Image: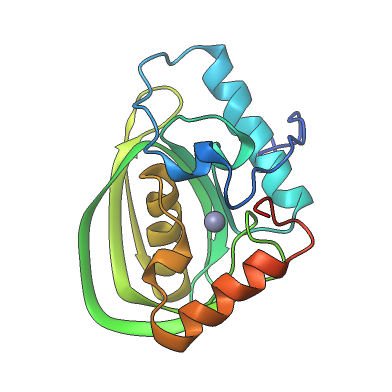
Length: 181
Ligand SMILES: [Zn+2]
């Protein structure tokens, strides 16, 4: 991504991995190679996220088991947050827990009320290896927790409880894209 360019403008849209794909359910590996392949991956992830009208995307959602996510996401005050994090670590979670609607490009068409902390802080590095620290509140805090979960091999339905969980898993099993018999 060149300075001043629109993220994803030179990227290629990659196929999305769906619930049940093993790469989505295993912890991603730490990035150690900060070469042009990593920059190209981030570009492709932005292109893929925008094409799918998402607000965040993790690398394993395009089949790459590396600790990377991108986002272009509003918070509850409609402030836009745009960026990427390589080797993200959630370093702080606090505030009230809010149950709000959450969806995922790897479970297309589905949504479930998911409890999340109202404030999250993620630390990591950029594609060039520079340290980055991202604060989020409200919907953007939800996004940071959602994408950090992906990198750890989780999906949002892990946090859904009770009848909501039964319903969303039933819907996932019956979805046209479902991979399990
Ligand atoms: Zn997701």
